[in-house]
Image (cartoon, rainbow, N blue to C red; front, side, top):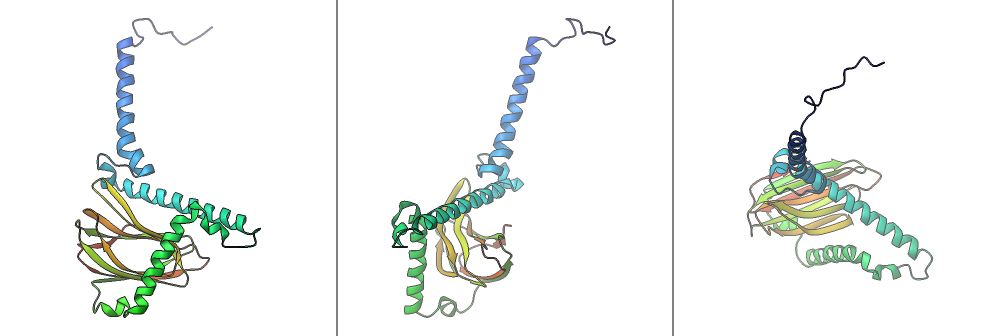
Length: 229
């Protein structure tokens, strides 16, 4: 014997009410997907709301971490493959190492140009901004400049205590670009020309077992230097 009264047919929601409720739920879910989930998870921000809420930067960091993890996995796989070969450099000719070779070549070119001319830190009499920060093992941080399209900033950074990973990139107004990436790089210097109006700068990560201190110096045509995280 049940004590609960069963609803009558008149008390049950109609098909029209159920349809409207389903459509309303679908609209709300789509709005949350576009304004919250896509920016936070994939750095896709078609409405601009994610940037205002700080979710797009969260998504960019997640993508950078995932890319770093993939690079570490590929490097470990390449190392294990080459360990049984007579020539330890043979694996460097594989396609998966092409990004690392390009980054290394860029750093080598920058180093050779610095040997032929005075150091960049000496060539620039005064730096507009100079920041120093310490990264614990596994920690990452990001510094960006607000720049107009075509603006050029001169930079020089050095890592004391160990080489680090970096990604020079930019984003803004729905655009994104990666200028240069490097793994295990102790220093870098050169010029950064903004491909579009937005935020442009560096993401640094310490993959060492000890703390490292990074000194970043910048000069040129930009609005503001700010730490993003």
